[in-house]
Length: 131
Image (tube, rainbow, N blue to C red; front, side):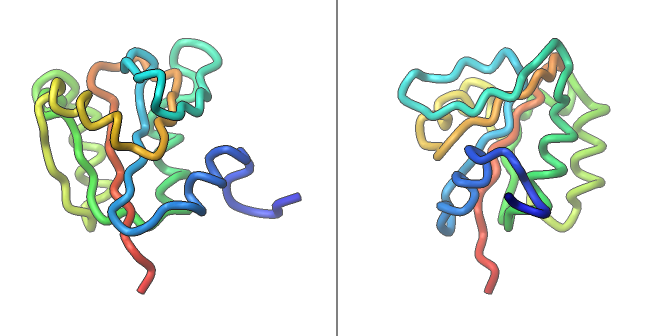
């Protein structure tokens, strides 16, 4: 049994298999996920687990080279946007329309679905390298 880090075997496996520029998406409970994209569904109830808690744990285990958000988050969920840009200020942020972000789901190695119910609480995490 693992002693530290992410215990969820599906998440740990996806993170261990990431290469440079591969992506993983942390998603709210409403993001439409195509059938062909692997989904690790952590949602238990509305709001549990929340987006921020899941992202925090993923960020401790993954080298994140950049984060992509829907540009709508700035106006429609400014509290989360400010938190993310402050908490992860060392990581470059990129923005796409929500429609464009949804098109990128097919390219992700996996979507980690949370119970988050706040608007635009979705982030594409691009893997970096440790060297």
